[in-house]
Image (cartoon, rainbow, N blue to C red; front, side, top):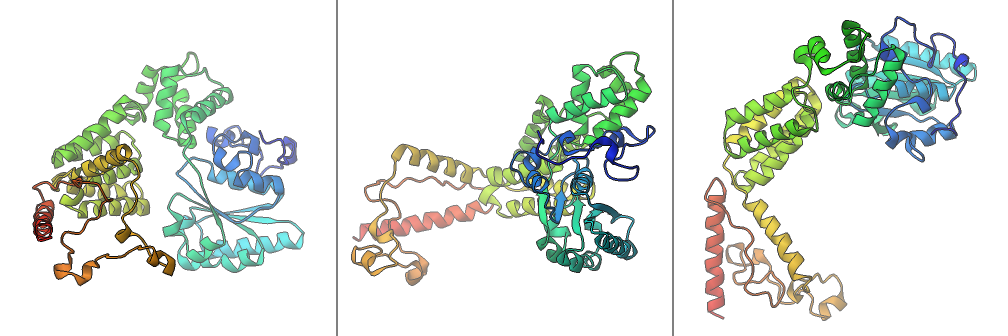
Length: 448
């Protein structure tokens, strides 16, 4: 797949350099770390033909970048392979353990590499853990071209990486590995141990448990094989004995997963805060991606609450954004708060019903011309053609309402009513206002 990417033979890597073989006693995840780009599983949106990182490897022109993605998707691997492909010195820094001293030493190593005529790549793992001053320390050296900067983060770079550093690096989003990719990795792991291939049902359970995380899959498989032995194929019973409560209570993407999110949605719609919180806890305990739940909460706020309490949508969005900043487990509390708020909020699907009705009406009715008085008139010609003539400016009308005015195409009578507020929450007042405005319309039309 990567025939046009320059790679070195396996014996070209002395120990301790990117691509060197891991020691036999190293964890399976380290032993299976790809040594060449064509060994990478997943991230085809970055490494496929014509994609950004593939293009960089082919052109042999590295660029500073931020690799953003969840754990176990290959951020460190790609950084190491970048250094290998460009024959560059690789200087890793852990932002969890490092500080200014490590940054200074990295700069000195890069200067020595430059003196030898070699490129240097400085890799900062968990770059969001560095404070503003520490991140700023990289700027002059990135600008001067002393080294290529690669940062890895599980947090949203927009929030956690300084804008100055962010503007000098390309953000590449890495995705969780899919089922097919994890199964391929599991087959590779079985050959490396060696161990019998897991039975299909057991393999599916392991993949569901990994939840897109390659490192988690490999570490779990290695531990299970160590406990269960290699004398017979791994089955679900062996998984249960080895992992117990750690296994998912449902498979992500399977019937139980969608049953659980359905139960959560219906508990919120049914105004049961305790029931909603129960299903939210079940999903988190079962390994559901909190980001998926956050997206569903936003949908619930607009579909089942709507204008009965417009604050619900903002609270759902705030909870989602806060989770992106905090991650798990701290961020899960904000989602729980949103679940409770949505459950106790007044309910209305009037906006949802109105939108569906408007869509259906337009599909059936076709495209009627815009009435002349509602048309835009930015030029003299358009004004001469009557565009905007007799338009009534609402702010100049009594009470800010041009009673009796028509905002539908000509000939569309009676005007359809898509939105019907319910007698709950803010929509009580909205309904009362609409009724008053309709009375004004009726009086204006009667006097004509």
